[in-house]
Length: 113
Image 1 (cartoon, rainbow, N blue to C red):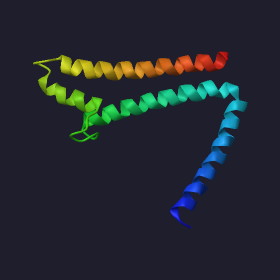
Image 2 (image 1 turned 30 degrees about the horizontal axis):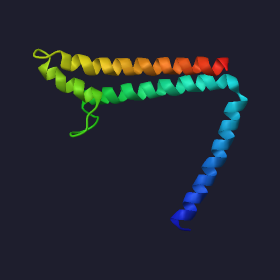
Image 3 (image 1 turned 60 degrees about the horizontal axis):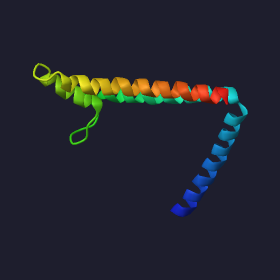
């Protein structure tokens, strides 16, 4: 069995599983809103977790960057330029808040349609 046969088999299995899952979600309209809100909150949770790991120094290494790493590196210069801490913190907070609003809006759209 070569890699092409394995790829075809995996694609077939995922299409069957995906077909079953979409049928279940379509059949249970009340769950669609909950699934959307749960997914958007999970994405927001992952973003906050990554920023927390960046604050602890366990996230991206140099030359890559993350919001948590930007905040931690700016703490050394907070007396000189406090905006270096403020703006990455605001971006993080506003991004998580925006994801929450998107999830709520999608839930309202799914429930009313």
